[in-house]
Amino acid sequence: MKIISASRRTDIPAYHTDWFLQRISEGFVRWRSPFGGRELEISLAPTDVSAIVFWSKDYRPLLPHLPALHRCGYRFLFHFTITGLPNIFEPNVPSADEMVSTARELARRFGPETVLWRYDPILISTITPPAYHRERFADLASRLAGCTYRCYFSFPTFYGKVIRSVTQLERETGVACIDPPVQEKIALAADLADTAGSLGIQMLTCCGDYLTSDRIAKAHCIDAELLSHLYPDREFTRTIKGTREQCGCFESTDIGTYDTCGHNCVYCYANRPRMWGRTRASDG
Image (tube, rainbow, N blue to C red; front, side, top):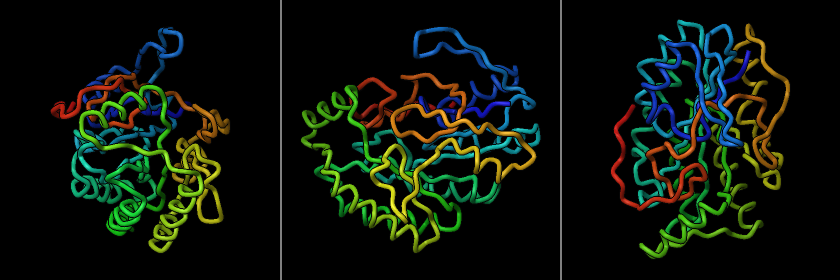
């Protein structure tokens, strides 16, 4: 049995729910590997899937279908990115208010331990300095307290395509993104961890081992140990197979495709740079 990641490469719940349900109905998914182009196929039959780890900024299109999937034998974790960043950085992402409400509904249906909040990335810019994040994080954490026990975070990695995106953004808007010194990141992360801890939320750093401390744990975003705790009747891999340096994820199969997400976030590593102000694509 395999852990299915759906998906780091695109937002399946927000934009590809119909496709995903069709693949579940047919019992398999076929895709072309982004690393070499080889065509791959994997079973999605309930007997072959130990759990599905979803990643999304908007679960509303998928939410009505989750009870039926659960009855069919599928089990879930929900990485839910809620940053509340200004629209200029996340032009097609729904409001934080709407997403907090959705997170609460997921927790009500499947339990707070299945909802993994991502305040990710912590994007420092000329309009979102560290003080902005201290205030914004405190507000979101207070509203999410009780419907999640974990917060995953990282600072952006400025890959080539991200540099092109932020350069274009600065040229068109005058807003500059900043990669702050390490000590500034550590100080900000420590403050956020204090806030989270006071509300019963554990902070976990994704691919940022230098941020770990007695209050901040190393993240395993695909977490076989958590899945084993939640679903003790299932068998899960014990192999850690990270996707990049310092990644602590356990082995999984990601079924997403790059350049298929409509959120158009400026910091995204999975989409090519695009013009800002694009209208949000239709759900599904």
